[in-house]
Image (cartoon, rainbow, N blue to C red):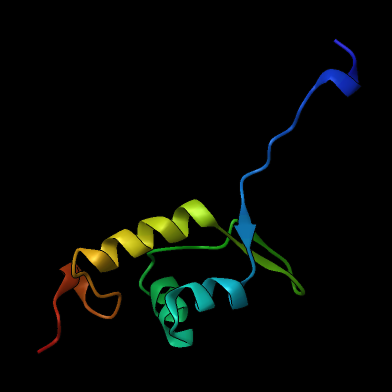
Length: 77
């Protein structure tokens, strides 16, 4: 098989600004990173990228009532 015949499919990634906009709360992405829910798939001094699939998992956790600020999804109230 020649090099031109090989197809490379890369996972869909987004920058932090886009990731934060998806959740409509800029601080929420930072909270999820601090809580260990998500980590960059690529990081340099000038570029950070997150996998969209990881962001979807975070959204699912939020939908189930978990909160990245509290362990085990406690609401803090």
